[in-house]
Image (tube, rainbow, N blue to C red; front, side):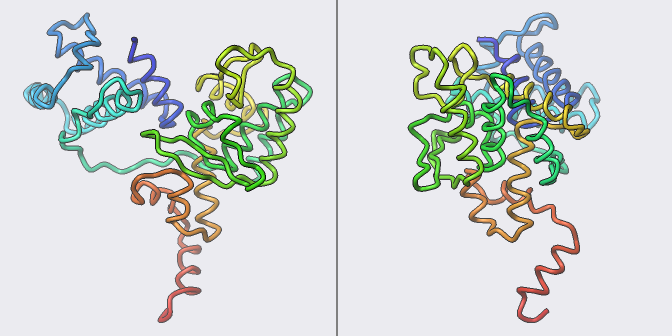
Amino acid sequence: MLYLPLFQSYLRLEKSLSPKTVEAYLCDVKKFAHFLSHNEEIIDEAALKNAVLNNFQDYMQHLFKEKTKATSQARTVSALKAFYRFLQYEKVIENDPTELLEAPKTARTLPDVLSVAEIEAIIAAIDLSSKEGHRNKAMIEVLYGCGLRVSELINLKLSQLFFRDNFIRIIGKGDKERLVPIGETAQKAVIHYIDGFRSKLKIKKGMEDILFLNRRGAKLTREMIFIMIKEVAQLAGIQKNISPHTFRHSFATHLIEGGADLRAVQEMLGHASITTTEIYTHLDTDYIRSAIAQFHPRY
């Protein structure tokens, strides 16, 4: 199994990191692999998979002796943590060996948020006369309407749709299930796709229950979703750095700005900790002031 190419896609599609950050993280992991093999030309993926805490501590000590800048050391820790969380996410390893590796306190960068008008412009730019047009529209409606991760979108099944009750059942990280409300707009887009494009496909064996399929009747990849969104955003004239995660981020941001309860948003996003959800509370000062004025009894 080639971990690094998959890790690269994971950083771009699941974490929505910039191309420069992705490149830096890959470089950091490769350098660690060279350190493990004592060879600057060899990347032993088995050694990477089996690394333990002492290996990371020895490597950080090596960087310190090499007088590596503190900022570069901090990024290395972040890169290694991201890589081993990815291996755990893909069930390559059971436990994260970097869990006790001290992480530096660094400022969190937030991905771009789309306005409602920008999201509408992106959806309007989809060519509905093409074979995949209604499928692409349905996927974006579900990404934004339900705040899904791209991995949750491509694994969504027909048997997980409960439109009569206005919910979909999602299998998230760690195989944790959650129910997410789905609105009428997204439901209509999905039904139009199912009755149109999907009903005409020759579906591959084993893919009968997968909702979103390619023209060969097989499950889509994260890369396909990423490319589609980039192309449509470009057609819509959106200059921001767009990825599937942008719609999830916009979903949460718009809910919180509209006054939604943080705990409810946490449940819909499938965050284990509310501190993860709190990154979406990057609200402007006027909104925060008006919220306090409205709800605080002694303001």
